[in-house]
Length: 290
Image (tube, rainbow, N blue to C red; front, side, top):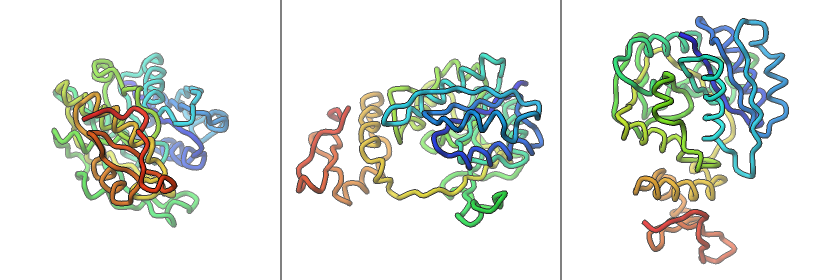
């Protein structure tokens, strides 16, 4: 098996370096490492001279222009295309914030080998607090997300709970990736592209497989809940998802936006509300009737 790790990056140079450190000390190293830099001039030269340089892992560097909203879906597709062109037959996608545990890649490969049917293989994501993230190197201790399984090493479990899929960390074999056709590139900016991918996979009969031992550690970065700074992208992407699937994604965030008075559901679509408008709303780009 030839395995490629694919990551996309914009402005997270320290996180990228720590991910590469983690891969360099992995019990099973990747044959290929693909970095897709979205308008990030520092990521590619830093990778050429970074922790994976000289380890035997083949480096593939993709420079992808980005507009006002990052093309996250298109970037993952570009990374996968580069990996497949290099001969990889197993793809592991890691968010740039994620540091793989020493046995994460090995656990993913064991699960891929053992799978009797196509699946999206998903390991646990453990969250580092700010103090553990800022040490050099980071202290790899953190709790997994409470809403997702964290199985013991060596155990796997199939699941049809496609809404629990995250693109933070997952693995898929090349035939399954090609069958699914990758992420829908209509989405730009934050939100819904991974939910869309998971639903498309579910509709095609490809479900989740939780993988014990494939743990990764998510480095701390500032965030808000709900992500009000991404409101417009979330509303736009929610409308795209609704157009494609006839249902609304990210409903918890949409409801929280409404409670905060920064979005409203009107005439079958979600619209932003700006405080300066004194309650008047303007249509969200791409919003469609329900």
